[in-house]
Amino acid sequence: MKALAVAMLLLGVASLVCPSLDGMHEDGAVQIIATNYTVYRNAVHNYVYEHRSVTGTIPLARLQMPATWRGLRAWQARVEGGKCYVYGEATQEEIAAVRDMLHDSFATGMASGGKLIPILGNAISVPAFIPNGSLVSITEVE
Image (cartoon, rainbow, N blue to C red; front, side, top):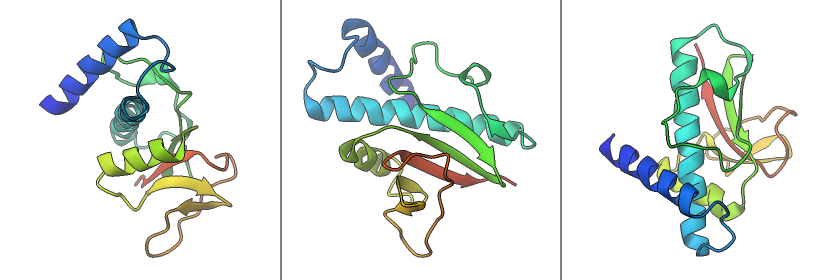
């Protein structure tokens, strides 16, 4: 938890000092985007597990985000059919960085042709509302 707090502090400082990621070293920008998504994803999961009956789109205003956090992409979250989908536009490198941060979770990857890539074990379906090429994380909600 301390590491996450430090990462958020650094992300906040980076967002104040450098409002655009254009001038940053590519590897650093990839890690910042991956951290930004991971913090958003974790806040969504916390919200969903505290409000298990929630369905549909989850607005950012309902999430308890760190004070220094600001979305670097248009991350989205939606609960449908007993699953929570957290997704948004990302590059292949950013998707790989998120998977590294999440210890190669089999439920995190890229949406492609209605499936989650990389597919480990049984194929995981991705609903049509998630655009192809998006970074997506899927969690069951019970």
